[in-house]
Each structure stands twice: as C-alpha cells, then as structure tokens.
Length: 261
Image: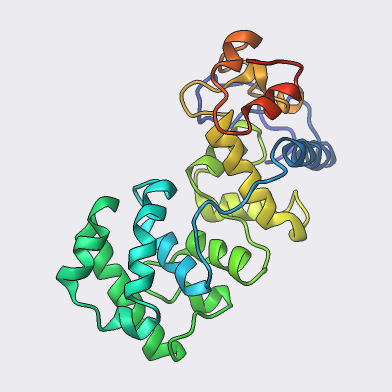
C-alpha cells in the first residue's frame, strides 16, 4: 500500500480499506501488532489437511480446490493407502481413482490432475516431491499457493499461502490493495518477518474461518478490531457478534475480548 493514498473507505466485505494518514512505518508496526494478536487468538493454528509425507500433502492440497479440508480428509486415507508413492499415482486406474475422489467434486478433473502429477514427479524428480518453489510450480496443477503450502508444512521453508480467506482479510486490514494473489504475497511479505510467513498464513486462514467471515464478520467480538480499518463492516453488537464466532476455539476467542456465549 502506498502512503498518502485516498482516505475514502469503501464499506464492502472484500474492498481494500485505507488507514487514513498511515505511514509505511505505521503500516509495518500495525501489521505486526495484528500478527501478535492473531498468534494470541489462534495459538494452535495449523494446516488442516491431514498428511504424513510431502507427497500426501501435495496431493491433498491439489484435491482441496473447490471443496473443504474436511471433505478431503475423509477421502485421503483410502487414497493414500491405495497409492503410496508417485509411481502408483502415475500408473493408477482412472476409473478406480475417480470413485475414490468422487466426494471431493470435479472428480474427473482431479483424477487427471493427480495422475499427471504422479507422472511428472516420476519423470522429472525420480518420484520425490521437490523442496524448491521453482521446481514445484513446474508440476501440473501446482501454483504458488499449493507450492507454499507444501514448502511451509512439509519442508519447513517459510511461505505465504494466499487463499480466499487470506486475500479477503489482508485487504480488509489494508495490508494490501491487490486482488492478484502473487502481488498480495509480495506486499504482505514485506510487512511480516520471513520466519513467520507459514504461521501467519495459518493464523489468517483460521481467523477468516472463525471470526472474519466473508458475508458477516464478527467485528464486535474480534480481538483485532482496534487495529482494523474495516472494523464495523460486520456485526458490531458484542453479544450478537459473539454468536457469529465459529469453531472449537470459540470460547477462547470470546474470552480475549471479555465475552462468553
């Protein structure tokens, strides 16, 4: 975000808010305060896809498009047992795999993606998932978002995962003014220390799923509200907002702002 931008605030859920008069240094300090608040709000934030190997995480992330992590986690135990390595995916029977993947939606396209992914891993990387972003994004169906999920969670290489939640929240917070995921990643990466990128991604995604919802954010029950230039676009009444907070951590999230169910 450029210092000195217009100060008009657009009250729509995904519009980039503007913090009036904020300098670049002020933006960095505010972003880091908000990240500390996110860490307090979501101390157990993590990748919500189940996996034990880089290959399992890569496949699960590809499958997560257009569906929920919960649905993917229901399907992957059978998938991973049937196809234990890249060569197994490469030589998979298409009809058999389609039946396993059917609950995830778009199962024919996802079957094509997973088989092609296995073939590319065998042909290019001896069946191993590479640990470099430049290599990962050469694989079929793997963009920067998927690559950063794998790098951050399977290889401990810091990366920012710009999914729908991350883009929506960082625009609301005026950390970025871009709709382009690559530009969002770049802009946010200049605000938060690199070592924190992976956990930042988890915490923002958790907050988007639990508090800062797309249609009706729980502003009146949000521990980040004091630093959020979009505070007020959602429910501001604390008791009504409390009812909008979701997830098993709801009691903890409400306690941070002095509320309860």
